[in-house]
Amino acid sequence: MDTFTPLNKNAFLAALGALDCALSGAQALAEGRHLAYALVRPPGHHAERRLFGGFCYLNSAAAAAEYLSAFGRVAMLDIDYHHGNGQQDIFYRRSDVLTVSLHGHPRFAYPYFTGFDDERGEGEGEGFNLNLPLPESLDGRGYRQALERALKRIEAFNPQFLVVALGLDSAKGDPTGTWSLRAKDFEANGQMIGMLGLPTLVVQEGGYRNRTLGLNARSFLVGLAAASTRRSDQRREVRDRMRSVVFRREPDPGDPERIRRLVSQTGFFSPAEVDVAEELVRERLQRGEASGYHFILAEHFGQLAGYACFGPIACTTASYDLFWIAVHPDFQGRGLGRRLLTQAERLIRESGGQRIYVETSQRVQYDSTRAFYDAAGYRLESVLPDFYAPGDGKAVYCKILPR
Image (cartoon, rainbow, N blue to C red):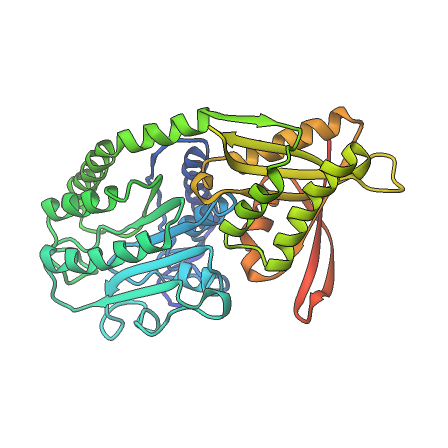
Protein backbone atom coordinates (compact mmCIF):
# COMPACT_ATOMS: atom_id res chain seq x y z
CA MET A 1 0.00 0.00 0.00
CA ASP A 2 3.03 2.29 -0.26
CA THR A 3 6.37 2.56 -2.02
CA PHE A 4 8.76 2.45 0.94
CA THR A 5 8.32 -1.11 2.21
CA PRO A 6 10.66 -3.06 -0.08
CA LEU A 7 10.72 -6.77 -0.77
CA ASN A 8 14.19 -8.28 -0.84
CA LYS A 9 15.67 -11.69 -0.18
CA ASN A 10 15.63 -11.19 3.61
CA ALA A 11 12.23 -9.52 4.06
CA PHE A 12 10.23 -12.71 4.55
CA LEU A 13 12.85 -14.27 6.84
CA ALA A 14 12.90 -11.19 9.05
CA ALA A 15 9.11 -10.90 9.15
CA LEU A 16 8.72 -14.60 9.93
CA GLY A 17 11.24 -14.32 12.76
CA ALA A 18 9.27 -11.43 14.25
CA LEU A 19 6.02 -13.37 13.97
CA ASP A 20 7.54 -16.46 15.60
CA CYS A 21 8.81 -14.32 18.47
CA ALA A 22 5.35 -12.84 19.07
CA LEU A 23 3.79 -16.31 18.97
CA SER A 24 6.32 -17.50 21.55
CA GLY A 25 5.15 -14.68 23.82
CA ALA A 26 1.52 -15.65 23.25
CA GLN A 27 2.31 -19.26 24.08
CA ALA A 28 3.97 -18.15 27.32
CA LEU A 29 0.76 -16.38 28.34
CA ALA A 30 -1.37 -19.39 27.42
CA GLU A 31 0.88 -21.51 29.65
CA GLY A 32 0.34 -19.25 32.64
CA ARG A 33 2.87 -16.42 32.50
CA HIS A 34 1.50 -12.96 33.19
CA LEU A 35 3.78 -10.71 31.11
CA ALA A 36 5.77 -11.19 27.93
CA TYR A 37 7.63 -8.74 25.69
CA ALA A 38 8.30 -9.52 22.02
CA LEU A 39 11.16 -7.24 20.95
CA VAL A 40 10.83 -7.59 17.19
CA ARG A 41 11.76 -5.99 13.91
CA PRO A 42 10.25 -5.43 11.43
CA PRO A 43 7.04 -4.13 13.03
CA GLY A 44 3.71 -5.52 11.89
CA HIS A 45 0.61 -3.50 12.76
CA HIS A 46 0.14 -2.03 9.27
CA ALA A 47 0.00 -5.48 7.63
CA GLU A 48 -3.58 -6.35 6.68
CA ARG A 49 -5.08 -9.54 5.25
CA ARG A 50 -4.21 -8.61 1.66
CA LEU A 51 -1.88 -5.61 1.93
CA PHE A 52 1.43 -4.81 3.54
CA GLY A 53 3.18 -1.48 4.07
CA GLY A 54 4.40 0.98 6.65
CA PHE A 55 7.58 -1.09 7.15
CA CYS A 56 5.30 -4.04 8.04
CA TYR A 57 5.05 -7.39 6.21
CA LEU A 58 3.30 -9.82 8.60
CA ASN A 59 1.12 -8.71 11.50
CA SER A 60 2.90 -10.31 14.46
CA ALA A 61 0.59 -8.86 17.12
CA ALA A 62 -2.52 -10.02 15.24
CA ALA A 63 -1.06 -13.51 14.88
CA ALA A 64 -0.48 -13.58 18.64
CA ALA A 65 -4.06 -12.43 19.28
CA GLU A 66 -5.40 -15.11 16.94
CA TYR A 67 -3.44 -17.76 18.84
CA LEU A 68 -4.70 -16.53 22.21
CA SER A 69 -8.30 -16.33 20.99
CA ALA A 70 -8.44 -20.13 21.22
CA PHE A 71 -8.24 -19.75 25.01
CA GLY A 72 -10.60 -16.81 25.58
CA ARG A 73 -11.47 -13.27 24.56
CA VAL A 74 -8.56 -11.04 23.52
CA ALA A 75 -8.22 -7.25 23.54
CA MET A 76 -5.66 -5.57 21.28
CA LEU A 77 -4.48 -2.11 22.35
CA ASP A 78 -2.41 -0.22 19.76
CA ILE A 79 -0.46 2.69 21.25
CA ASP A 80 1.71 3.41 18.23
CA TYR A 81 1.58 6.95 16.83
CA HIS A 82 0.06 5.54 13.64
CA HIS A 83 -3.27 3.76 13.26
CA GLY A 84 -3.28 -0.02 13.71
CA ASN A 85 -5.03 -0.62 10.40
CA GLY A 86 -3.72 -4.18 10.14
CA GLN A 87 -5.49 -5.69 13.12
CA GLN A 88 -8.56 -3.58 12.41
CA ASP A 89 -8.81 -5.16 8.96
CA ILE A 90 -8.07 -8.67 10.22
CA PHE A 91 -10.61 -8.72 13.09
CA TYR A 92 -13.18 -6.24 11.74
CA ARG A 93 -15.99 -8.81 11.55
CA ARG A 94 -15.24 -10.62 14.81
CA SER A 95 -16.56 -10.09 18.31
CA ASP A 96 -14.08 -12.28 20.22
CA VAL A 97 -11.13 -9.92 19.59
CA LEU A 98 -11.57 -6.26 20.53
CA THR A 99 -9.29 -3.87 18.62
CA VAL A 100 -8.52 -0.43 20.09
CA SER A 101 -6.13 2.11 18.56
CA LEU A 102 -4.89 5.51 19.78
CA HIS A 103 -3.19 7.38 16.93
CA GLY A 104 -2.68 10.60 15.07
CA HIS A 105 -5.75 11.62 13.09
CA PRO A 106 -5.63 10.25 9.53
CA ARG A 107 -6.01 13.76 8.13
CA PHE A 108 -2.30 14.24 8.87
CA ALA A 109 -0.89 10.85 9.94
CA TYR A 110 -0.04 7.66 8.04
CA PRO A 111 -1.79 5.58 6.72
CA TYR A 112 -4.22 8.46 6.01
CA PHE A 113 -7.14 6.34 4.75
CA THR A 114 -8.03 4.42 7.98
CA GLY A 115 -8.38 5.23 11.66
CA PHE A 116 -11.53 7.36 11.69
CA ASP A 117 -13.79 7.16 14.73
CA ASP A 118 -16.78 5.91 12.72
CA GLU A 119 -14.97 2.66 11.84
CA ARG A 120 -16.59 0.43 14.48
CA GLY A 121 -16.64 -3.06 12.95
CA GLU A 122 -19.08 -4.92 10.74
CA GLY A 123 -21.52 -7.82 11.17
CA GLU A 124 -20.67 -9.83 14.30
CA GLY A 125 -17.82 -7.40 14.91
CA GLU A 126 -19.88 -4.21 15.03
CA GLY A 127 -18.91 -2.29 18.15
CA PHE A 128 -15.71 -4.28 18.67
CA ASN A 129 -13.33 -1.82 16.96
CA LEU A 130 -12.58 1.48 18.67
CA ASN A 131 -10.49 4.20 17.03
CA LEU A 132 -9.36 7.23 19.02
CA PRO A 133 -7.83 9.66 16.48
CA LEU A 134 -5.91 12.36 18.36
CA PRO A 135 -4.74 15.90 17.50
CA GLU A 136 -1.44 16.75 15.86
CA SER A 137 -0.03 18.35 19.02
CA LEU A 138 -0.35 16.24 22.17
CA ASP A 139 1.48 15.95 25.49
CA GLY A 140 1.52 13.12 28.00
CA ARG A 141 -1.41 14.41 30.01
CA GLY A 142 -3.65 14.66 26.97
CA TYR A 143 -2.58 11.20 25.87
CA ARG A 144 -3.48 9.67 29.21
CA GLN A 145 -6.98 11.09 28.99
CA ALA A 146 -7.50 9.21 25.73
CA LEU A 147 -5.80 6.10 27.14
CA GLU A 148 -8.20 6.10 30.08
CA ARG A 149 -11.13 5.96 27.66
CA ALA A 150 -9.51 3.06 25.79
CA LEU A 151 -8.91 1.13 29.02
CA LYS A 152 -12.52 1.57 30.11
CA ARG A 153 -13.66 0.00 26.85
CA ILE A 154 -11.27 -2.90 27.39
CA GLU A 155 -12.54 -3.43 30.95
CA ALA A 156 -16.12 -3.50 29.67
CA PHE A 157 -15.12 -6.17 27.13
CA ASN A 158 -13.73 -8.32 29.99
CA PRO A 159 -11.02 -10.12 28.00
CA GLN A 160 -8.86 -12.99 29.19
CA PHE A 161 -5.73 -11.63 27.46
CA LEU A 162 -4.33 -8.28 26.34
CA VAL A 163 -1.99 -7.75 23.39
CA VAL A 164 -0.32 -4.32 23.36
CA ALA A 165 1.15 -3.01 20.10
CA LEU A 166 3.80 -0.76 21.63
CA GLY A 167 4.85 2.13 19.42
CA LEU A 168 7.52 4.46 20.74
CA ASP A 169 7.11 6.92 17.88
CA SER A 170 4.79 8.97 20.07
CA ALA A 171 7.94 10.25 21.80
CA LYS A 172 9.15 13.83 21.63
CA GLY A 173 11.43 14.26 18.63
CA ASP A 174 10.50 11.09 16.77
CA PRO A 175 10.98 11.75 13.03
CA THR A 176 7.65 10.09 12.10
CA GLY A 177 5.48 11.68 14.81
CA THR A 178 4.35 15.05 16.14
CA TRP A 179 3.69 14.36 19.83
CA SER A 180 5.86 15.14 22.85
CA LEU A 181 5.70 12.15 25.22
CA ARG A 182 8.72 11.69 27.49
CA ALA A 183 10.06 8.76 29.50
CA LYS A 184 7.89 9.60 32.52
CA ASP A 185 4.82 9.55 30.27
CA PHE A 186 5.66 6.09 28.93
CA GLU A 187 6.07 4.84 32.50
CA ALA A 188 2.69 6.31 33.46
CA ASN A 189 1.09 4.69 30.40
CA GLY A 190 2.57 1.34 31.39
CA GLN A 191 1.20 1.70 34.91
CA MET A 192 -2.30 2.46 33.62
CA ILE A 193 -2.26 -0.58 31.36
CA GLY A 194 -0.78 -2.80 34.05
CA MET A 195 -3.59 -1.90 36.42
CA LEU A 196 -5.95 -3.89 34.21
CA GLY A 197 -4.37 -6.95 35.79
CA LEU A 198 -4.57 -8.94 32.55
CA PRO A 199 -2.08 -11.45 31.19
CA THR A 200 -0.34 -9.10 28.75
CA LEU A 201 1.84 -9.56 25.68
CA VAL A 202 3.71 -6.46 24.51
CA VAL A 203 4.76 -6.54 20.85
CA GLN A 204 7.19 -3.88 19.69
CA GLU A 205 5.97 -1.70 16.83
CA GLY A 206 7.27 1.72 15.71
CA GLY A 207 9.85 4.06 17.22
CA TYR A 208 12.63 5.74 15.26
CA ARG A 209 14.51 8.17 17.50
CA ASN A 210 17.42 5.97 18.47
CA ARG A 211 18.67 8.30 21.22
CA THR A 212 15.57 7.74 23.39
CA LEU A 213 14.18 4.36 22.22
CA GLY A 214 15.81 2.31 24.95
CA LEU A 215 14.93 4.70 27.75
CA ASN A 216 11.31 4.97 26.67
CA ALA A 217 10.89 1.22 26.23
CA ARG A 218 12.41 0.57 29.64
CA SER A 219 10.20 3.21 31.25
CA PHE A 220 7.05 1.68 29.79
CA LEU A 221 7.97 -1.82 30.92
CA VAL A 222 8.95 -0.63 34.41
CA GLY A 223 5.53 0.98 34.79
CA LEU A 224 3.75 -2.06 33.40
CA ALA A 225 5.61 -4.49 35.66
CA ALA A 226 5.17 -2.34 38.79
CA ALA A 227 1.40 -2.12 38.31
CA SER A 228 1.19 -5.82 37.55
CA THR A 229 3.08 -6.59 40.77
CA ARG A 230 0.45 -4.69 42.73
CA ARG A 231 -2.06 -7.10 41.25
CA SER A 232 -0.09 -10.17 42.36
CA ASP A 233 -2.56 -11.08 45.11
CA GLN A 234 -5.37 -11.27 42.56
CA ARG A 235 -3.25 -13.38 40.23
CA ARG A 236 -2.36 -15.70 43.11
CA GLU A 237 -6.06 -16.09 43.87
CA VAL A 238 -6.69 -17.12 40.27
CA ARG A 239 -3.82 -19.63 40.34
CA ASP A 240 -5.10 -21.06 43.63
CA ARG A 241 -8.56 -21.30 42.12
CA MET A 242 -7.26 -23.37 39.21
CA ARG A 243 -5.24 -25.62 41.53
CA SER A 244 -8.42 -26.24 43.53
CA VAL A 245 -10.35 -27.56 40.52
CA VAL A 246 -11.20 -31.26 40.84
CA PHE A 247 -12.59 -33.54 38.14
CA ARG A 248 -15.20 -36.27 38.29
CA ARG A 249 -16.82 -38.48 35.68
CA GLU A 250 -20.19 -39.44 37.13
CA PRO A 251 -23.01 -36.86 36.92
CA ASP A 252 -25.25 -36.46 39.96
CA PRO A 253 -28.94 -35.45 40.16
CA GLY A 254 -28.10 -31.78 40.62
CA ASP A 255 -26.04 -31.56 37.44
CA PRO A 256 -28.81 -31.00 34.85
CA GLU A 257 -29.71 -27.66 36.41
CA ARG A 258 -26.07 -26.77 37.07
CA ILE A 259 -25.11 -27.52 33.47
CA ARG A 260 -28.06 -25.53 32.20
CA ARG A 261 -27.02 -22.56 34.33
CA LEU A 262 -23.37 -22.79 33.28
CA VAL A 263 -24.13 -23.03 29.55
CA SER A 264 -26.53 -20.08 29.84
CA GLN A 265 -23.97 -17.97 31.72
CA THR A 266 -21.43 -18.29 28.94
CA GLY A 267 -23.74 -16.15 26.80
CA PHE A 268 -22.62 -18.14 23.80
CA PHE A 269 -25.39 -20.66 23.16
CA SER A 270 -28.98 -20.35 21.95
CA PRO A 271 -31.93 -21.42 24.16
CA ALA A 272 -32.36 -24.55 22.02
CA GLU A 273 -28.70 -25.46 22.54
CA VAL A 274 -29.05 -24.92 26.29
CA ASP A 275 -32.01 -27.34 26.28
CA VAL A 276 -29.91 -29.96 24.48
CA ALA A 277 -27.07 -29.63 26.99
CA GLU A 278 -29.48 -30.32 29.85
CA GLU A 279 -31.18 -33.15 27.98
CA LEU A 280 -27.93 -35.08 27.45
CA VAL A 281 -27.04 -35.19 31.13
CA ARG A 282 -30.59 -36.17 32.10
CA GLU A 283 -30.43 -39.08 29.65
CA ARG A 284 -27.12 -40.16 31.14
CA LEU A 285 -28.65 -40.13 34.64
CA GLN A 286 -31.61 -42.21 33.45
CA ARG A 287 -29.82 -44.78 31.29
CA GLY A 288 -26.23 -44.79 32.53
CA GLU A 289 -23.50 -45.74 30.08
CA ALA A 290 -26.12 -47.26 27.77
CA SER A 291 -27.05 -43.67 26.87
CA GLY A 292 -23.74 -43.35 24.99
CA TYR A 293 -22.99 -40.04 26.76
CA HIS A 294 -19.88 -39.71 28.91
CA PHE A 295 -18.97 -36.69 31.03
CA ILE A 296 -16.02 -34.98 32.65
CA LEU A 297 -17.09 -32.35 35.18
CA ALA A 298 -14.72 -29.80 36.73
CA GLU A 299 -15.64 -28.42 40.15
CA HIS A 300 -14.23 -25.64 42.31
CA PHE A 301 -15.44 -26.01 45.91
CA GLY A 302 -18.83 -27.22 44.74
CA GLN A 303 -19.19 -24.76 41.84
CA LEU A 304 -19.36 -26.28 38.36
CA ALA A 305 -16.43 -24.61 36.56
CA GLY A 306 -16.74 -26.50 33.28
CA TYR A 307 -17.56 -29.81 31.66
CA ALA A 308 -17.12 -31.94 28.55
CA CYS A 309 -19.49 -34.49 27.03
CA PHE A 310 -18.46 -37.15 24.53
CA GLY A 311 -19.54 -40.58 23.29
CA PRO A 312 -18.96 -43.33 20.71
CA ILE A 313 -20.45 -42.89 17.25
CA ALA A 314 -22.98 -45.62 16.45
CA CYS A 315 -22.07 -48.12 13.73
CA THR A 316 -18.35 -47.34 13.97
CA THR A 317 -15.59 -49.33 15.65
CA ALA A 318 -13.33 -46.61 17.05
CA SER A 319 -14.82 -43.17 16.33
CA TYR A 320 -16.14 -40.76 18.96
CA ASP A 321 -18.12 -37.54 18.97
CA LEU A 322 -17.11 -34.64 21.21
CA PHE A 323 -20.49 -33.05 21.88
CA TRP A 324 -19.73 -30.29 24.37
CA ILE A 325 -17.00 -28.33 26.08
CA ALA A 326 -18.24 -25.39 28.15
CA VAL A 327 -16.38 -23.31 30.76
CA HIS A 328 -17.88 -20.87 33.26
CA PRO A 329 -16.89 -17.22 32.48
CA ASP A 330 -14.98 -16.95 35.79
CA PHE A 331 -12.65 -19.73 34.64
CA GLN A 332 -12.27 -18.87 30.96
CA GLY A 333 -8.83 -18.01 29.66
CA ARG A 334 -7.09 -20.10 32.33
CA GLY A 335 -6.57 -23.30 30.36
CA LEU A 336 -9.51 -25.21 31.83
CA GLY A 337 -11.02 -25.90 28.39
CA ARG A 338 -7.74 -27.42 27.24
CA ARG A 339 -7.55 -29.55 30.41
CA LEU A 340 -11.06 -30.86 29.83
CA LEU A 341 -10.23 -31.64 26.22
CA THR A 342 -7.02 -33.44 27.19
CA GLN A 343 -8.83 -35.59 29.74
CA ALA A 344 -11.58 -36.44 27.26
CA GLU A 345 -8.98 -37.49 24.68
CA ARG A 346 -7.23 -39.67 27.26
CA LEU A 347 -10.44 -41.45 28.26
CA ILE A 348 -11.44 -41.99 24.62
CA ARG A 349 -8.03 -43.44 23.81
CA GLU A 350 -8.18 -45.73 26.86
CA SER A 351 -11.58 -46.96 25.62
CA GLY A 352 -10.10 -47.92 22.27
CA GLY A 353 -11.11 -44.77 20.40
CA GLN A 354 -8.92 -43.75 17.48
CA ARG A 355 -10.73 -40.76 15.99
CA ILE A 356 -12.56 -37.83 17.59
CA TYR A 357 -15.01 -35.75 15.55
CA VAL A 358 -16.22 -32.27 16.44
CA GLU A 359 -18.97 -30.34 14.68
CA THR A 360 -19.31 -26.57 14.92
CA SER A 361 -20.77 -23.59 13.10
CA GLN A 362 -19.01 -21.53 10.44
CA ARG A 363 -20.42 -18.29 11.83
CA VAL A 364 -17.97 -15.56 12.82
CA GLN A 365 -19.15 -15.98 16.41
CA TYR A 366 -17.50 -19.41 16.42
CA ASP A 367 -14.11 -18.26 15.12
CA SER A 368 -12.56 -18.71 18.57
CA THR A 369 -14.07 -22.20 18.84
CA ARG A 370 -12.56 -23.26 15.54
CA ALA A 371 -9.22 -21.72 16.52
CA PHE A 372 -9.33 -23.68 19.79
CA TYR A 373 -9.60 -26.97 17.93
CA ASP A 374 -6.99 -25.93 15.36
CA ALA A 375 -4.55 -25.21 18.19
CA ALA A 376 -5.35 -28.59 19.80
CA GLY A 377 -4.39 -30.52 16.66
CA TYR A 378 -7.81 -31.03 15.09
CA ARG A 379 -8.04 -30.90 11.30
CA LEU A 380 -10.92 -29.50 9.28
CA GLU A 381 -12.29 -32.49 7.36
CA SER A 382 -15.37 -31.10 5.66
CA VAL A 383 -17.78 -28.18 5.45
CA LEU A 384 -21.51 -28.59 4.81
CA PRO A 385 -22.75 -25.25 3.45
CA ASP A 386 -26.01 -23.80 4.80
CA PHE A 387 -26.41 -26.76 7.19
CA TYR A 388 -27.75 -24.82 10.19
CA ALA A 389 -29.25 -21.92 8.25
CA PRO A 390 -28.62 -20.02 5.02
CA GLY A 391 -25.05 -18.78 5.24
CA ASP A 392 -24.34 -20.88 8.33
CA GLY A 393 -22.53 -24.07 7.40
CA LYS A 394 -21.34 -26.94 9.58
CA ALA A 395 -17.59 -27.47 9.96
CA VAL A 396 -16.46 -30.98 10.88
CA TYR A 397 -13.08 -31.41 12.60
CA CYS A 398 -11.23 -34.63 13.32
CA LYS A 399 -8.26 -35.68 15.41
CA ILE A 400 -6.54 -39.05 15.05
CA LEU A 401 -5.34 -40.22 18.46
CA PRO A 402 -1.88 -41.75 18.88
CA ARG A 403 -1.95 -45.43 19.73
